[in-house]
Amino acid sequence: MKALGIIGYHQTGKTTLATCLIRELTKKGYNVCSIKDIHSETYHSDTEGKNTFLHTQAGSKAVFAKGLYDSALLFPRPLNLKEMVSYLQADYLIIEGLQNAPVSKIVCAENTDQLDELIDDTCIGISGVISSKMKSFKGLPVFSLPDDLAVLLSTIEAKCFDILPLAEPECCSACGKDCYTMAEDIIQGRAKRSDCVLAEQAELKLWVGDREIVIVPFVQKLLQDIVIAFVNNLKDIDPKGNIRLEIKR
Image (tube, rainbow, N blue to C red; front, side):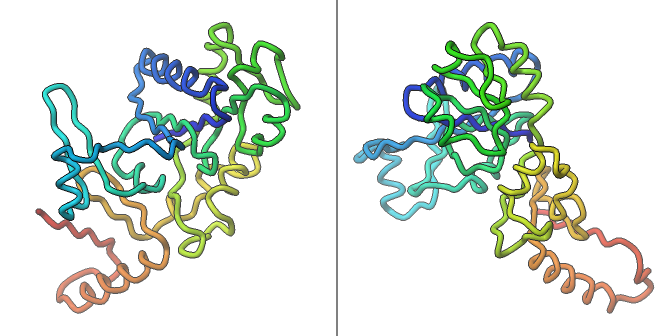
């Protein structure tokens, strides 16, 4: 699943850009999911007194609210990006907000001071309110909608990559850096997505259903040693053969 982040201050055009990209990528035949980061201290996804709220208040770790027209999965706590991504499957993930996400980003801004503050090596372009005032900024393209929509879509297709494992640095760093630094290096051409050791060179891989679960190196080694030790005690097996373990539930 490729990912694009849209970051910027309030009322700089983030949601306008996000909804436009979701619509246009869908028109092109892609499956699209999105994440909206909400900073309001008054916002709650559930409402006190509602039946779903009573479920979580009673101790439920998650509640599915199934209605006649839609459904929602509610958690009584904020999830981090890795947790949210684990529930999503799509060709593209559009993330509005989450400045620290290790993904390619479009920065929406009102002025150059905001650009100077928000731009880093994950930025692949600029849009939003400021797009009516300039065509480029410090070597980055500025996309004005709807005029530059086709070019923006082509840029996204070319510059976005499969989301990184989002592993904690203390658990991984198998490539010698954290996921954010790796994302910067990929976007700037200093590295390739395939340089992610955790995702591409793992000796042990785990699937739950049809979804591959990325495991940090320490847990990979631990699980691998346990399974190999068990298999090596079996008779009439090839000790050098690959091992496939399937658990039906």
